[in-house]
Length: 421
Image (cartoon, rainbow, N blue to C red; front, side, top):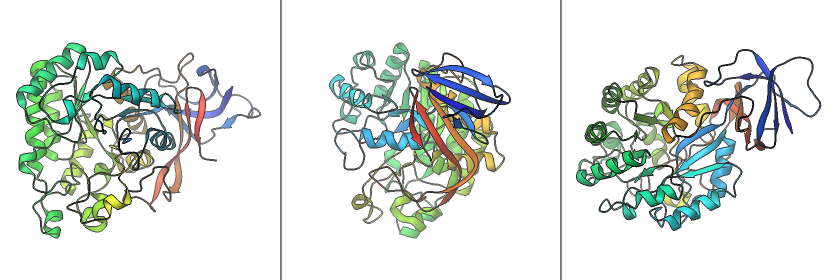
């Protein structure tokens, strides 16, 4: 049994007020009662701490199978737990691609061996080639949470419409990487100040906006649940804003690093700040924050993308895009959105808990008697230095930074899977 004493519950589902004691047994929340009396022996003292449902990240890469020198399902799960995540949804761009039941079962079975809840998407197209759809019905039956060719945009409009129609029929979401490859000369670096510093053309904002516009139109026509992944541009935010007025099946996610950084950081940090879509301008960052404020963007997702030092430590135009992000996600988002006064702490928690689960149809139990004991305990006030990572990879511009908001405990399936003690 786990006892938690005097926690300030932040739960957008049950919306309690005051401080509470919680008892957990056999993976279930058994009691949620207002705090009375003194700290029970052996209990977690949550005085001064906040407690929420466990975080859920709908966009992570654990590189397993095929690239386990960067990350594997076991190490990725440990990073997730350190970041307060009890649920993650893996992307399908592994080697081999998650485009068959056999590969999906490998991922899900290995995920069951970890301490957290591992879900996985399957790919929309075979081998991520954009030519032939996977057997979406069979993959859903085998446990696919949804479908994505993340990392590679689907350029064939006819095939994309087919995929949307099938996903709508199966009532599963499709998540899309929105970049028109035909407009990009060097990916991962914004066309503008950053590309000028490297003497290249880079990736223009039009590449994102053009794909988002096309895909939202088809989504509204087919009724599919669509997730616009890692949105980065002012134009993209406005397109999603208009589409969400017409359908509540349209979602957009934003990464903590796009909320925190702009293209000048790529010049300063090189390949460890290179990502797709790229970091853009101050105007774009402001538009992303405004999109969060008005509800256009409802999900925080890390796009945790490990790469080895050897892969990153080459010419920036040749290095792969992406950074790790699970361990710093809450702190960065808290700083960008709550400390800045853009949104409340409860709104931020909803972007880590309620909204991502709603996208994938995962049940939102909240902190209530009888609910699964998937819980995150964090400190709003504590500062911490990001000096080391549990990931196999270290590709992040945030190593060495002092950040606000610290994850203190992650409890999943009734067990303490991470503790900062």
